[in-house]
Every structure is written in structure tokens, then in C-alpha cells.
Image (tube, rainbow, N blue to C red):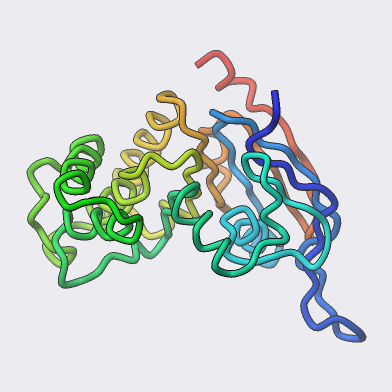
Length: 233
């Protein structure tokens, strides 16, 4: 079965020459459809650069990246924008919600960019908010919600268009322990429903809750292993 994500000998070099920084230094990995993965590493390890590559937010200096069989490492900015819009649902640490829009308005926003008609996108946004347990908060603005609720809006926004990949960058970094648990349960539920969920984190406790852990250090994959305790679930 062809992997959903296939990265081969990827390098990302900043300031080539004497003071160059090898943010990624020969990374190769495959992620298959339906996996629940954590990419973990300390600050400066290269995990954020790898996330930018997987999310089509940046292109490598060398190496290849195939997503759904397409070589996205050679695409133009406009082509990458289309891939991001169609293939990837982003969840960020900082929520990135629009302050003057209510929850349903925030979830609808990416669907507008996809050209989805108003009735269809409103129904999709409502369904996504129900999935994350916010059916009673749809008309609330971010300032009227807790951090955990805001992050659930961000999750709903990421899943509303049913993208094949959910890419979560430190999704619990700004949350208390109760909200962290709730968000991880939602992400695990998305995985169990068939989504491919990739979490970028520095938190070992988060990594313990996924099925596969990729540990990156100094721009290289140091470990890639299955979390045995989660394999039967």
C-alpha cells in the first residue's frame, strides 16, 4: 500500500555556506493513511521545520516529499496553497481564531476559500462543532470561551472539510491539564474514525498517547518506534 506521506533524504539548509544551519539533515520517513503519530524533539531539533515541510508551508533545499502520490517538494507557492487547502487540516498552539467571528464563523472560514456554498459550509461547520462538543457555543466569540474551548473550535475548523491529514503543532501547549486531556481524546477519536493525525510536540506525556513516535534531534530522525501500549487500541 502506497504511503500517504513519503519523505526521502530531505535537507533544509538556512544560510548556505560558512554559517549554514542544517535544520533538516537527511530525513527519510513514511506515514501511512490512518496512523496516529507524534514527532517529538526539543527546541531547535528540527521538528518545526519538518512540520512546515509536511504541512506544505515550506519547501526543502533537497530531497523529495510525496503526499498522496504527488511530488509536493517541487510545487509552486500557488500549488502548495491548493494542497494545504485540500489535503491538510492545521491545529496551532495559539488557536489562530478571528476575534470578531463567532465559533461557527471561524470554522466556516477555510470552507469559503474552498469555494463551498453557504448552505453546505454552514452544515459542515455545525457538524464539526458538534463533534468537538461545542454545540452550545456556536455563536460565542473567542473572547467568550476558555482556552480549551477555543482550541476545540480550532480542531473543528481543521476537520470541517474532512482533510486526509490533521497536522497539530503543540496543540495542548497553551492548555491546562483538563483541557489537554479533552483535546487529546478528540484527536484520538479522529484517528479512530480513520483520519491520519500527526502531532508536533516537545512533551513526552503527549507522545505516550499516540501509536507511533518519531524522535528528531539535530535535524535527523534519532528514533522511530511503535508505542506498544497503544497498539491494541
